[in-house]
Length: 221
Image (cartoon, rainbow, N blue to C red; front, side, top):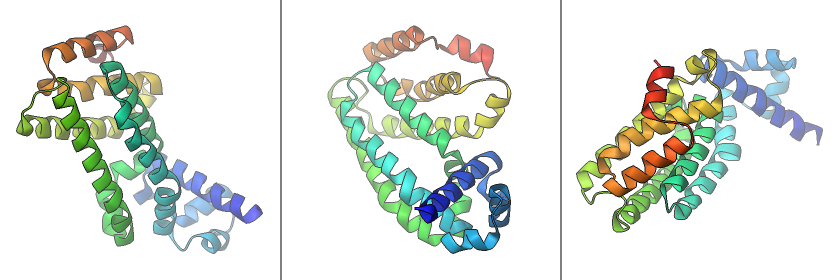
């Protein structure tokens, strides 16, 4: 029991430091020092930093991702889509080090790439199915090129916001507001493929939740 607790504490401390300082700037020695344990104690549980990151992915992140992907079937309205994006942004905030340093992490750990590939394929297939369904139900335009470009822009918008998270936090913007402003950026990227009725529904829903483009422009520079 004690060994399991120590193992989990190492993951907790590592995740906090990775998010705050970026994983590339954190060493196992720094993690052990922050925990007030010896480096040898940490190495008893994890061979190196890459092993820690792999365990964060396998034991925490992947299970949450799978749960999120299963929820796409429940998206049937603008409100549902915003709720879904909120859950995604909460997940991304909690594990932001991973997505803001993805290329660096992959260069340093080929095993992590292999672990990520299956989940990435599942994400790609799940979102493709969602887009097809949205097109069939009349929410978005049936223009394949436009859909691909819009989704790529939406992903880029989410990553951009994630990279700015600490800046916004230091400006006093809390997570609720941050997620609201992320909605604005992501939805703006998707708007070109929205059918007029769905765009109007989305604008109404965002306004009802206290977020609109004007508020975003006034608050986030």
